[in-house]
Structure formats: C-alpha cells, structure tokens
Image: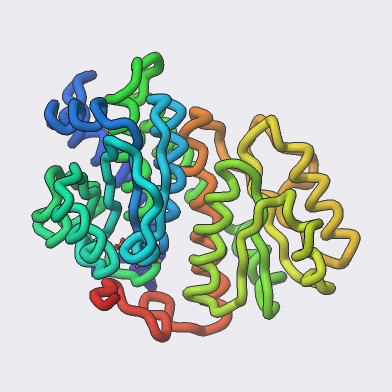
Length: 350
Ligand code: F6R
C-alpha cells in the first residue's frame, strides 16, 4: 500500500498536489461551487463563526479564521475543543459552529457537539470521514476528500481541510478572484517543490539533531509555525516550539544555544524584514538560521524557496517543507515515523 515510499507519511506528503486537484474536481462544477445553499444561508445569517478543533485540525482552523475573515468580513474565533467543552467563551447572539476533524471521532469535539446540539446551535463538521460520528451528528458536513490518512502525523488532511475552508469562505464572499485557478496553482507549486528536496534533506542531516528547535513567523506564518512545531516534535521528539517572531525578544530568546536551529517562515512582504531581523538576533546568539520563503521575497542565501501563490493561500505551500523537515529529522534519528510513541491516530477519550 505504501507503493514506492518507505513510509505512509512520505507517501501522504507527496499525495498533496493530487488531493488539492481532487478537491477542486469535487467542489467545482465548471465555475459553480457544489455547496448546500442552506449551509451558506445559515452561515450568512450568523453573527460570528466559532471554529472548534484539536491539534493539527485546530491549526487548520487558524488558517480558516483568516480565510473566512478576509473573504466574508465576519468575525471568527478559534477554540481548542478540549477547552471549549468545559470553559466556554461568551457567545455572540447568533453563532455558527465549524468543527474540524480528520477522523470525525475526536472525543473532545464530541463533548462540544453534545453541548451545541442541546442548545440548538447550527453546526458544520469538516471531515475526512463522512460516515463518522461528528459528520452524522452535525447539521451539515463537508468531506475533505484526502483519502485514507494512515500516518499518525497529519499532513494531507491539513492541506485538504484548509482547501475546503478556502472554498467555503470563497462561496460566502464576493468572489472577486478565480479560486479554482489559484488552488490549481497551489497544487503545482507543491509539486514543483516536492520534485527536488535534496537541499532540504542536507539541511536536516546537518542541523536537526539538537535537543531543541524553534519555528518563528508573524501573522499567518505564526499559525504555520505552530503546526510545523507540532509535527517536528511529535515524530522526531526534538523539543520544538512555534513562536510569534516578535515575541522572541520578550523572553524565549534566552533558550537559544549554539547550534539551535531556528526556522523563519516568511510569506508576506509586510513582515519580511521584521522577521529577518528577529532571525538575525538569534543568529548572533549562536542559532542556526534557516529561512523558508517565497520566490518574490527571497534574498541571497535563503534556504528553501517556494513558488508564489495567491496571498490567502500561502499557508498551503509554506507548510510542505516543514512536513518534510519533520519526516527527515525522524528518519535520521531512527524513529518509527508512521507510529510515533504514545500517540494514536484517532483520540477517542477526553
Ligand atoms: C497531529 C495530529 C493530531 C490531530 C488531532 C485531531 O499530527 O494528527 O494533532 O490533528 O488529534 O484529530 P482529528 O482531526 O481526527 O480530530
């Protein structure tokens, strides 16, 4: 089943361009989008959207917040499911809830859904398993069509969740760009990157043996930094954190030692120079600086360069090198990549 790949994780990373193309074919009918009109109406009628999820799916939710807010102007809050289940924020008068879950079985989300249903709030589950409990019990369900995800560390489901959130946000918007075209450019950009990863592998072999590593980013790159850090720690057991780049100097810079890899994610012109200057500060304290950026923002000596894509879709390309960094770090350290210690694919206890 792994085909030519040594691990499901590597196979699933490489499936990502195909997953995006599959999502396009499922949701676009020429230029019409296949989404239940009653779902669209229900979200349009709401005053605020609440996204609930756990782990990687919560990180997809952070990207979803940006897509929905930018394209619809509606406020969106993202909450960790296990927190929301028992400590609820003050809810807006007319809330709409989006639950994101690859498996559709996560117990923390089931606890949230029990509360939401008993209060008759409107709910949508975005999931890879359309027959799952969370899909069946919500008012609406959208499938992400990633195909079975076997590796415990989620990769293609994350990309698929964000793609479906983009389509949903777009359908709710004025549609003043061509999302179908922009998503297919993303698929191509990921494919181009995956075609040659020798440079990335060499970097990982050289630097990712340390006890600690840090990802830094601003804005939406901060969300990617959180996901990148989760992925690296869960399979390589290197202690990794994702930080807002501007926060380093407020404390965490104390953790930098000689040889600590610090990976800066830079996908936005507005913060390009600020994040670079934060990286410079850690470099002068001994860190190994690594830059992941886009073609239009690159400077001489940058390490990993991706093709430019639509500004709202950059998280889909920026995350891919971080998935591979995790994969090769775990591979070099000799760990069981598809079944990391202490973890299960679907977390059915609270
Ligand atoms: C990390 C990972 C987990 C899951 C989380 C939620 O790689 O896979 O963090 O994202 O347990 O699972 P689902 O999406 O099935 O609700």
